[in-house]
Length: 211
Image 1 (cartoon, helix red, strand yellow):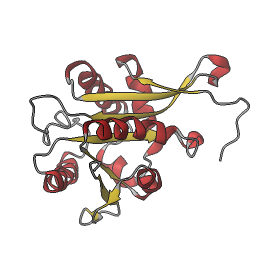
Image 2 (cartoon, helix red, strand yellow; image 1 turned 180 degrees about the horizontal axis):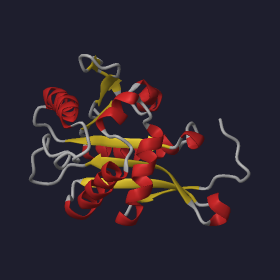
Image 3 (tube, helix red, strand yellow; image 1 turned 135 degrees about the vertical axis):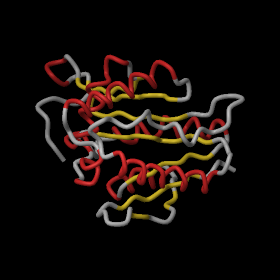
Image 4 (cartoon, one colour; image 1 turned 45 degrees about the vertical axis):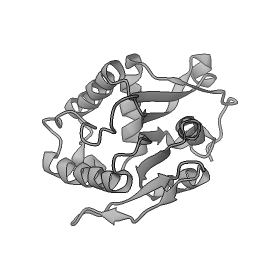
């Protein structure tokens, strides 16, 4: 665990469009796997695609809830975003939206690989949940220096507490790196899978509705 010259002061809040670049920076820092960089090269045009996609969802999609954890004591008290999450929450009168997770892929992304990978995730989620309302943890990232300090639990717990309040399931896909925090919050692993020809394994996790 990284030591700090200050005592971290962590605060959970909703992210805003002004945080879009910090969020995409965290995504690239948290997910260094070659497979993911193959889909989304870390170049200005693709990172701008992430910024634009996240900003659009914050402003236009009521079901998309972006959260951030800020260390208020970092940067000599100026603060620093150290983790974020994107949850899709149920909206009254609307069925779960499985298909419009992303806008059209960035010009410089690997569009074919994106379609195969995220298409498979969509099918697995639909198969597991059918048309049942649920909370979907779309993205979660904590910068490495702040991992195992409760940042992930703050972000996950926000959604699972609401799922319990509403009496519905929660769902997430993750690499092995996230298994511990999801297990801690009651998620149960389903069958892992890999995309043929790619060295990257993902496990889908389903959290049952409270009884």
